[in-house]
Every structure is written in C-alpha cells, then in structure tokens.
Image (cartoon, rainbow, N blue to C red):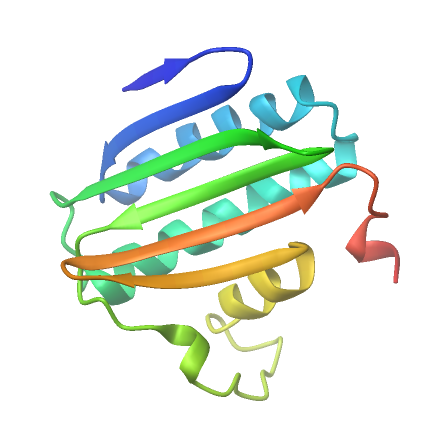
Length: 145
C-alpha cells in the first residue's frame, strides 16, 4: 500500500471508506516524524480524513474501487500532502462555502481544509483532480484561535 522514506510517504489506495483510517494514521505518523507537534499532526490527519471523504463522496459518487494516491513530503519547516483522484475533476474552490449548521452532519470538510492548512490548491487534471495542501511546522494550532 505504501512506499515510505524519512522524507516522503506514498500511499496508493482504493476509494473504499475502510481505507481512510489507515491513511489518516500513516499521515499523522509522517507528520510526527517531520517535527509537527501533536495538535498539528491531528489537524492534518483530520484534513486528510475529510479530503478523502470528499473524494469518495463527490469525485467517485461512493464507488469503493477507484484509485486514490496520497503523497506526503517534507516542505520547508512543515509538510505537503497531495491527494490525487481520477474522478469528476470538479474544482470545489470555485464554489462559495455554504453557511454550515454544525449540528447537521456533512458539509464541514471544505471548512476544515481551508482553516487547518496554511496553503491549499485544487489543480484540475485532464482526468481528475490534484489537491495540494501545506501545513507549516512553526504555525500555531488553528484550533486555538
């Protein structure tokens, strides 16, 4: 499922929701090795969890057998996480974030991604989407704002 070195993590999974937890754990461990503190590790893990849920739900319409690639690498004083899918290619950054009732399930993935990562880019591909996200090690926990 993965190729790992001290400077990068490369995971290739199927879009089955059962794979999300394993990816989240692997990414959090990579973040720890890259020097992010525990709150940052957990926040990046949450973002990856939400991004994968969005890929499964929106890019693949719930299909459990489609490819997803997750690459994590050191980026300056932090980490970069790339999530590549071969789905619909819809760019969610062109949509206005809806006002969310936090008591209603769903709809908070994009908010988490934008609030918890320092840089976020959606890069449409001819056959899907590439999401690039950066979290800097020296930034304070976004949850403490």
